[in-house]
Structure formats: C-alpha cells, structure tokens
Amino acid sequence: MNQPKQNSTIGKYSIIVLVLLTSLLVCYYVISRAFPMLIPTEAVYGSYYFPRVYWVFPHIVLGIVATIIGPFQFIPKIRNKYLKTHRQLGRVYIISTVLAGISGMYMAATSDINLPYAVGLFMLGVAWSMSSIMAFISIKNRKIDLHKDWMIRSYVLTLAFVTFRFIYDIIRSFDIGTWEEVQVLMSWACWAIPLFIAEVFIQGRKINN
Image (cartoon, rainbow, N blue to C red; front, top):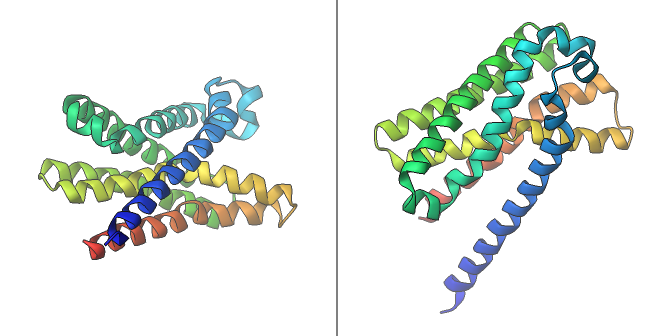
C-alpha cells in the first residue's frame, strides 16, 4: 500500500538531486567560462574568436540569459501563480535560444577548424533553435504537454556547452586524447547524449501515465 508513496518520494528526491547537480554545473560554467567572455577584448577572446566578436559576444550573452531563465520556467509555483511572468520569461527565453542557435550555426559554418567539429556544433545550433521554435508553436496551439516536452529538450540543449566544458576539462585533466580528438568528441556528445537521455525520460513518463 505504501509502494506508490515511496516511489513518489524517491522520484521527488531524485529530481531535487538532479536540480542541485545541474545548478552546480551551471554555476561552474557561467562563473569560470561565460562571465569572463563578457569583456569583449582581444586579450580575453584570443586571436581566433576576436575577429568574430560581433557574433560570439551576442551568442554568449543570449546563452547566459537562456541558461538563467530556463529553470524558472519549470517551477510550478511560478507557472501557476505568476502566469504573466512565466509567459514573459518564456518569450525572452525562446528569442534568446533561437538567436543564439542561429549565431552558433553561423560561427560553425564559417569556422576554419576540422569539419567533424564544425558540423557537430552546427547541428547543435539547428537542434537548439528548432526545439525552441517547436515549443513556441506548441504553446500557440495550446498543446501544453507538447510544449513542456519541447521546453525540456530545448533546455537540455541550452546546457550543451555547460556539459561540453565540464567533461572536456575532466578529460583533459587526465591527459586523455589530443585537443582535436576531445573537441570533436564533445561537439557531438555534449548535446546528442543528453538529448537522448531526456527523450527516454520524456517518453518513459508517458508510458507510466
């Protein structure tokens, strides 16, 4: 008789742990990687990124905005009690992710680094923009559950560079593989694997219901 309640408790604490871990990863990335890039100088950006600063800087700013706003869109109390705020933040989030995805596609397409790495980042930009567009189309058509599913996918992709940098730093700290090999691996793994896991969660939740 207590099994459903026990499973509910386990699920609740699992979500709390997941949120805490995600928050730590986000803080790590934003503080160590993103915030320093808000100073658009050649000393900060380096000789490779600085010539494209007018694309890189907005990409980073929009990514930070989406990363910070995203979690608030999943909090039921905000969504239920402050619907207007939820909608306004949602618009900012969707605009930020779509534009950040497009700028990411441009930078990948104009990159002179190895092709597999560039293609991985280009496809990340495509998936990121499209998932947010689908979330917008879904809510405009009042498909609330579908909207939630696409928002989950979208935020998983928003966190792609958080995953990229965190795992990249771990791999390189153990001196595994060359710089180029790890870059190519993570350009795909940072978003394809989390997106697959998110899809299993989304579809598994529907099976249980």
